[in-house]
Length: 95
Image (cartoon, rainbow, N blue to C red; front, side, top):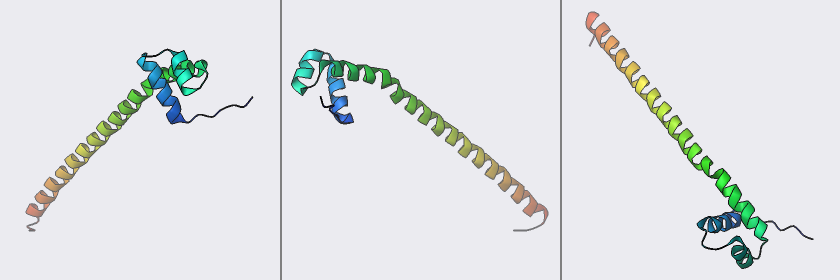
């Protein structure tokens, strides 16, 4: 008995078709020439992994917000330094 290896893309297509619930796992398995247990397994894996899509986005959003806060802080510091420089130039009679 040989063990077939299926691509991630193929598994995703099968899982998506199973999630649509337009066909039974047996119908999908018959059309794709695979064991029905694989359809159920890949569907379950897809459902269990769905949260990762949103978790990555949430983490990316957090990093973006942190980055924007850091940029704002740096702009504030630069502005404060420029005020200090201008004040020192005025006190020292420099242009």
